[in-house]
Every structure is written in structure tokens, then in C-alpha cells.
Image 1 (cartoon, rainbow, N blue to C red):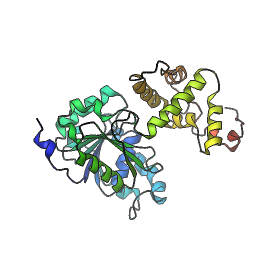
Image 2 (cartoon, rainbow, N blue to C red; image 1 turned 135 degrees about the vertical axis):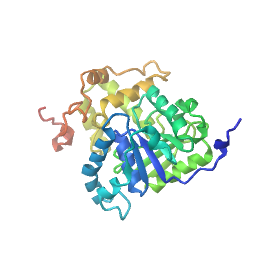
Image 3 (cartoon, rainbow, N blue to C red; image 1 turned 45 degrees about the vertical axis):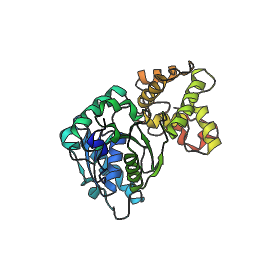
Image 4 (tube, one colour; image 1 turned 90 degrees about the vertical axis):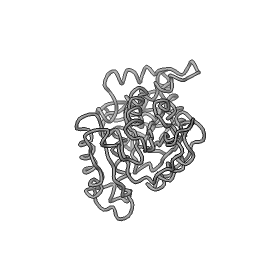
Length: 313
């Protein structure tokens, strides 16, 4: 039987809550605040939301000066003033029109969060920013899955102004439409994914590149630097697959890979020993200072790298 709240009209999205104040969470909160909306940012880890606001204050001024936010948004302080940091999840999401989850890319964690959101935000649209998991994996813990969808942002949001919108299989058409309108209101190039596609559009394609890059190295055919320099020369990009993995965080890459492998039907689609060793050694990329490259000044940024010369590390 259809619930009354499944037939209720979709409210205009003015009050937004972001759950998870990590790299993606604080960027999403900043982008939404930059659109003039008020945002509640919550993280269960003590101090995480406050640290996110500190990053806004220090990292956003040059971004704003570069024109990444709407005209009239002239300083980071005005933007940050629209970001609230409630002490509890209930306070953060209770009056939200839209809640965006941006916690760890791990199914059990996301299911626990959405079970709470279903109870604490009964009138809100609920979205996951997952980069690999379809919202259908949490639909059974949401009491009204017609309000559930994927809103997949890309990091950094001001350099990759894109959004992928995908339903959970039960998402109401008007909720999908509201998600698309919301993305466009943020100035994002917004694409609707038809049906359910694991990895959506970009990450489904990127996953194939990432998997084969790791496999070439796992099988001993090349080292990460040669993969990257060939890629950079062929496609004219500023970094290659391994440089991008370092930016994302190799622990995050490993979590995402595990989610694909869990549903894979190809027996060759298996864990990368190279990636596992890196994570076990704590070499997580930019966040740890060491990954496939040393950071914050990785070799691939040097002009000589593209020409086949690697500086001593």
C-alpha cells in the first residue's frame, strides 16, 4: 500500500543538511551555502565539522575570487555564516528539505546512517553522495524510498562542477526532477542516469581505467609512472590514473574497488595486490603524504616527467 507521504508534493529545497564533514562533505556544504541556502553540517566524529569550517575559511577565498560561486558571493566569511554545526544528527536534519549523506564508502555504515535519517528526517528528500553504491542498497531501511536518490558530486566541486542524479528504483519522478533542478541551481552540469548503473556514468568508465591501470602494474608490465606519463601525453591531461588515485585517497579507492568486486561476475575482477600493499603500509596518497607519489610535490607535476624523466624521490 502506498503511504501518504509517498504522494506528498516535493517541497522547494531551501534547507539542506550534509551528513559527513570529510573532503566531499565540507565541499558540498560550501557549494550549497554559496548558492545562498542555509546548511547544517554534521559529523559523528568530534571536531570534524569544526575542522571542515576551518578549511572553508582557509581554502575558499581564492576559489571565490576565481569566480566559482555565484555573483555577489564575495567572501568566505559570508558563506561560512550560513553553515550551522548542530551537536546532534537529529538537530541537523530535523527540518531539512534535503539531506545529503557523505560518509565513508562502506555499505554497513551507509545503511546505519540512512536508518537514522529515515526516522529523524521524515519529511526530507534523502540522497547519498556515494561514488559507487546505488541508493537501492539502502532503500529497504528507508520507510519511504520514493524520496531516496543518488546525488553524486565530484571533488573538488569548484573544478568539476558536475552532478549525477540516479533513482533507487522506487524514487518518485518528481523527486528525481527536484534533484536535477537542485543541481542546476548550484551551477552544476547535471546528468540523469537512466535506470541503475553501478558507478553511474563517469565512475563506471573511470573504474575500468583504474582497474586496468592497476592490473598492468600488478602483472609487472609497467610501473605507475610510465602508465601515468603515457596517459598524460596521449590525452593531454595534467595527471594520470595513479596520480588521480593518490588525490582520491588509496583507502577510498580500495573501498570502492571492494564494492565492485563484491558484485563482479568476471573471475578476473579481483583485488589488486599493489593497492592492498599500499593501504596496509599506510601509503594513502595526498592525505598521508605518500602514495604512488610523494606529496605535496608529486613528480608528475614536473615538466620533465612527461618527457620520460623521473626526478630522484
